[in-house]
Image (cartoon, rainbow, N blue to C red; front, side, top):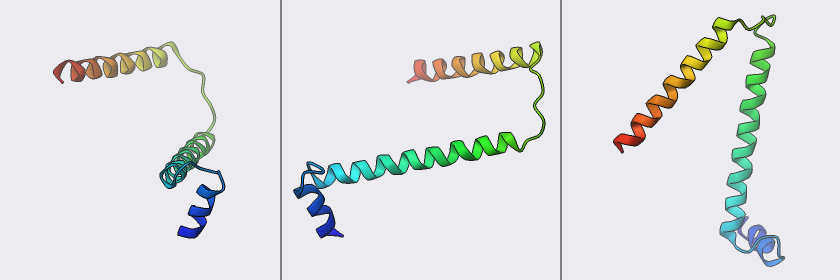
Amino acid sequence: MRAYVEDLVANGGYSSISEYFRELVRLDQKRKAQERLESMLLEGLNSGAATEMTQQDWEDIRKKVHEKVAKRQNLNQEA
């Protein structure tokens, strides 16, 4: 494996072995994010028939977002 990586670096694919490994980590992160997204999409598709959003649904979402923002701002002020 070492020879393989050294060959990639030597032939101009990467400027260093570290750069190659950083790229591997980035690709792995993207792959896992894609898998999570696909899983969430399938979960949504399999969750049953879609229902129309009500005014109350939107108000509940806004309330949760405002609570999260306020909590995050409080944490930032404490730090």
